[in-house]
Image (tube, rainbow, N blue to C red; front, top):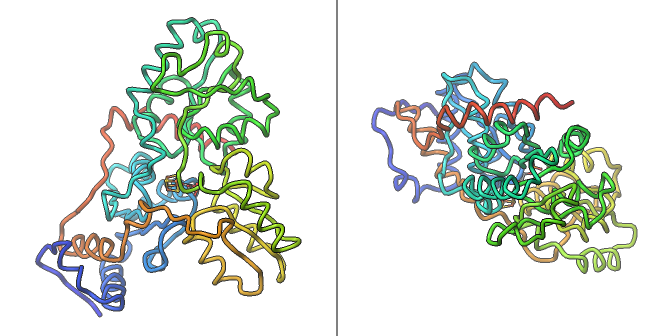
Length: 368
Ligand code: 13P
Ligand code: SF4
């Protein structure tokens, strides 16, 4: 089926369409746009969306892919806002990044604003922690472009769950202290991998003076952790690990490092979404896994590997509601708008922000 649209569609036009119609129209628009289009899909996307992606990946892999596809005029990003921002920063100036639903944010990324980060930095300067010690700001990919720019401008970098270890390794050698935004759990879990004692990992609560710490605590810190978290991964608890091990002897627990410290400490393995997939791909038939990450990914693994016993670590649903906002209706609308000559939902990071954010992202990409 080929559709040459002349009228720019409205999103409402898609609400009544069947799954089959939506799927056929998405594929027809993909064919029509050809090499001008690349669709990137994060592993947490729902089945009826990710099946249309040219490439899938974790947030690191997708950022690399965005930087490596200059032939595509349009990068349609099926993921969340911070990922689309990073794709815009890393792609070439002639490319346009599109997020099919602008409501697809990340509640963890929203837990730190650039104003709060700047205020925290000033407080550390005022008490001389920055000055007496070399502090590097490191931000998780799950943050706004403005925070990435702040890190770039202050000698710091970005990391994802797939390269936090080498990034911390390099940064801890260069600095006395790292200030990590916004995921306390990834920060703490990585800190433990370097043997940093608990008392040298302090939590910065942006609602409190000095983040709720004393000057002495901040002076003694090796890692300052922003008080942010992922509510999806925060639902996995120690009792889930205990229960699944009781119910399925020999089962291995494989979790994302956004889970709380206690869960990661009890797990057998932890890593990014790509790591989780690769681990299961490499496992022999009959392997048993309890996976602590977003349910769409886990359900896909269950279907893909019927010869392995795979289950979600929690007995109840752990879904990222903002990832789920990218529905086939949004994707069909975004693509058919492009066919009709209109770019909808473009993500544009202002150049003054993009310049420094690119510096922080490039420092991450330089890590091997
Ligand atoms: P990955 O980089 O592992 O895909 O994680 C992104 C994310 O948002 C996990 O919640
Ligand atoms: Fe953000 Fe958590 Fe959703 Fe990942 S799973 S996009 S960290 S809210």
